[in-house]
Image 1 (cartoon, rainbow, N blue to C red):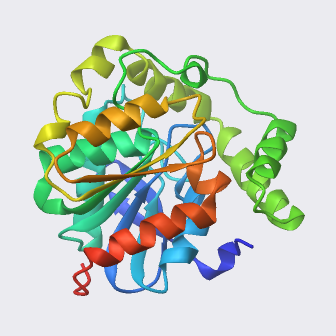
Image 2: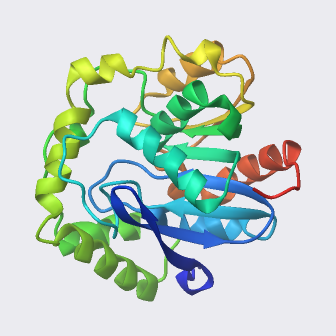
Image 3: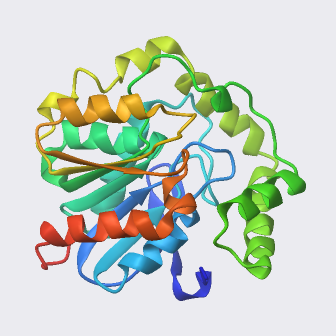
Length: 276
């Protein structure tokens, strides 16, 4: 069961406005970066926050433009998102952290490790984007999901009770039905789906320069980011370990126990025990 009541939901003021951070635990800081889907936010990581919070201080922000925070009506860029993570670290008093990213969040995490290595103790890339200039089908059209579609998605996760599904769906619907939601998300997608931008921020030429110890986790049957991309990352990164799980793109939610069994020992190995 993923009881969200055990996690603090706090608001942090950043230069673009307010952003929401889901937070729990004490110890080495771990920052979790979610993916690109319209309704996503830091609460994507609820099960991971709970799994890690007994040993680590865990932060899962709503990335700029997602979740429950303020929208920014500019044409986004990957650079904006990397700057967002740096600014968030400063606002939270985190000099360096274990950075974990799923899908687009993995892309942002890897760019941060490349540009600001002093801020990244370890890097965990979960079904990460950043290896292709072509746009995944799920990103090509901005469409507000229906209640039924969100319920189906939540039930497909397989780890939520009906009461939790109802609560999560109401939270997601409130996000996507905001008057500014479609306009803001359209601006985000306008940038992220352009081949020229996907090429400019592509990870292929950057990976060999990332020195942080890296864990790569991928679903064997991922139809969004092919496992072949994960294998290429593993070959290119100087200090990488790879775990393949029997699932699709959502390793975190399709195989939470196996995912946490891979992640926690990796984080422990490089934990300093000195907090932020």
